[in-house]
Image (cartoon, rainbow, N blue to C red; front, side, top):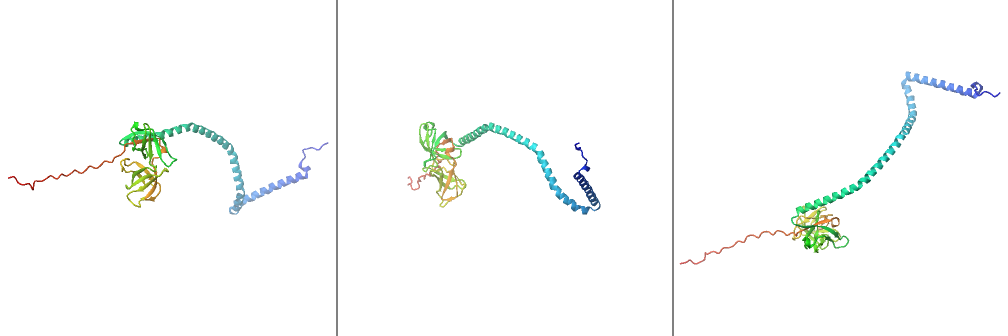
Length: 302
């Protein structure tokens, strides 16, 4: 007959040794636990180093196990948050694309509104504007600087009239046709504008350079100092340009002659205002004192 499978430990020496070793370990553990318990009760200071050593050994293990548990527990929440964020990003992208056209249109309308308001305010301040016309083109690649207006002699435009924009002086009329006019820009080498400095009234001449910039030269003071940021406006001298029209701002510090940039940039403007030429009011002549003849030396009548 085959031996039974349910054999008792007594039939196997290895099983007997394993069972005996388990009993020994259990009894030894119980004895150690009792000793530690008695030591902790009777002499706590002596047990403190051992407790600290055990804590040092077990704390990293318990912390690692706790972190691992938290990481595993946070995996479902992280996956859910990822898909939620992706969905929100897709929604925001759709809203951004839908509002992009509206934003561009609003910016365009705001720019046009600001520009037209500035131009209307300019018309209110100018005494005798001739016409507001569109700047059709301007030269920016050659040494000569011209612009073309879509208004001419039929609209009252005449040679020599100043042209300005909302930011400042543009130039003066050089040639006219029935419905067009050619403007000599202040950045042209042939353009010279009498100006003065706003902070102290220093008189100067603003001459074009042909490269889009302006040279400002002092006409009264030798070795005059120009500081970066100095603003120059028309002085009214010469009878063409009205006083106090912004012309240019100094770019860098210099003496006698300084480099400046004009306030009005024709290549960024679409409308300009043509003005009547300014004529300074002549001071009234002093009244003539008539010397009446006296009859002191006349002979007496008999």
